[in-house]
Each structure stands twice: as C-alpha cells, then as structure tokens.
Length: 222
Image (cartoon, rainbow, N blue to C red; front, side):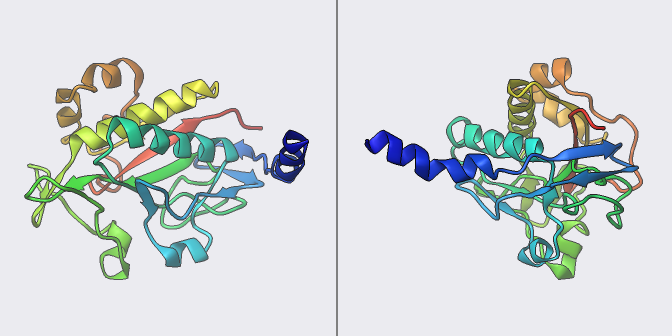
C-alpha cells in the first residue's frame, strides 16, 4: 500500500516532465520545450540570478540531465571542487546575443574553475561590472589576480560531461577553450581520456574562451 501511494505521488513528475525538441544547428536553429537548469546544487551554481530571471539559462531536456548527472558524479570524484555554469539559451532558442551559437538548446558555457593562492577551489566572480565574468582575462600562465585556473577540475568536468552524455546515448560535439591553454589539460590525469574522446576547437574563436569554456552537445535535432 505504501509503495502504491509513493508511485501515485511521483506520477505527476513523470507525466508532466518536459521533453525538448531541437531544430537546426547551434548557430541557426530553435528549441521547443526548453527546460531551465537548476539555480544551484551541492557543488555548483548558476552565474547570475539576474540572467536566470531574464530567461538565459534554458537548455534541451537531455542536456540538463547530462549536466546535472555530471555534477553529481563530481561530488564523489572531486569532492573539494566547485563549479559554475554560465550562458545557455532561451526557452525557445533562437538568436541569443552576443553569442553566435546557443540557438537550439545544445550549447552551454561554463565558467572556468579556479583556485586561490592557498589552493582552495572557489567560484570565479560573475557580476554586471565584469560582464558576468565574461570580461575576465587570464594571462598566459592561467592567472587572474590571486586566482589560478584549476585544470584538474576543468578536465574532470569535461570528462564527466562526456561520460554522462554517452550513458544517455549522446555525445559531446566539441569543446571550445583557448588553444594556448589547452595543453595544460592534457598534463592532468584526465589527459589521455581527453585526447581520445573530446574534440577541442584548435582555432581561436571570435572571443578568447579563457574565463569560460563552451560545450556543444551532440543530440539529434529535427
């Protein structure tokens, strides 16, 4: 009897869970039934409550499941690391200024993980005065003020995203991160996995992609 009551209580969440449909490409497409990423979790947070209210944190439903599962995996694999996601897209996709992509729910920006001079994992600061983090510039050594890029956390996150995507029958199409900083990822214990499974963009994009990394997910679209 208790089991029946539990199943009845859970039924609405299964019945009304949104399933998204993407159309076209990341640079010329749209999205139906986009879902909003959670505001925060045990080891992650969104980049801005203002942007969230403005509707800039929607993705394809499968992308949301992949992202949440990846963060869940990292709770155990990298328990002392914290993460922050950034721009995603609108509920119905379409043009998403100033980005050239992010149009069909399959593109997500993540703020680069960083550590303090004491080695503590912290969130990169994101607020209107620094264009929600997008105005931050790291030097060639991966430093900004007293912060240093946490390549271990960054590599672990990309690997977790890939494994979560594959578990759902999907994949990652590409990862965009400053080509000059990419070699540091391959010196981590995740290096071989990244080389064998992840397609990194080798050309510098129209913006540098040092304070954030852009991930395009490979999910079938109409």
